[in-house]
Length: 192
Image (cartoon, rainbow, N blue to C red; front, side, top):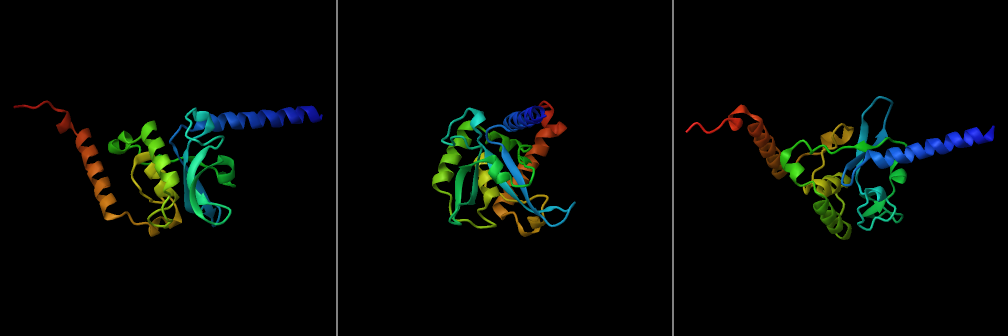
C-alpha cells in the first residue's frame, strides 16, 4: 500500500518540476502576488523577479537558482541576488507578467545579451531601495526592458504609484507610434 502512494508522490513532484522548467523562459518577469486581505480581493502588492533558471542553459553565475530579484537578506538588507523560485513563492501562485511586451519599442530591448548585461550591472550596483523609485518591480522592468518602472497593476497599492513624467512621455510616445504604425495611412504607398 505504501509503494503506490510513494509512486504517486514521486510522479506528482516530477510533473511539477517539468511544468516549472517548461513554463518560463530566460528573462521573463515573474510576478508573485502578496498579502491578500480577504478571499477574492486584489493583492496588496506584487513582488517581481526575473527568471534565469538553471534549465535556461544560460550561465550568468546563478548556479542552481531560478530567479534574479531585489529582496531582503538575513540581516534585513535590501539586495539584488539570485534566488530559488520555491522559496520566493511562499503560498502564492506566481506567473509570467511581461506587461510591456506589447509595445514595439519595449520588445526591441528584449534580448539575451542585454538582459545579461543589465543583470551583471544591477547585481553589483543594486542602488538604495526606495518604494516608489527603486523597488523589485523597477529592477525587473529594468533588467527586461532597460526602463525602470513600477505600476503595481491589479493591486491595492497601485494608487500609490505615480508614473514619473519622463516615463509617462515615453509610454505616450510609444503608444502614439504604435497606433500610427498600425493605421491604414502608414500602410499605403506614397501617392506622389
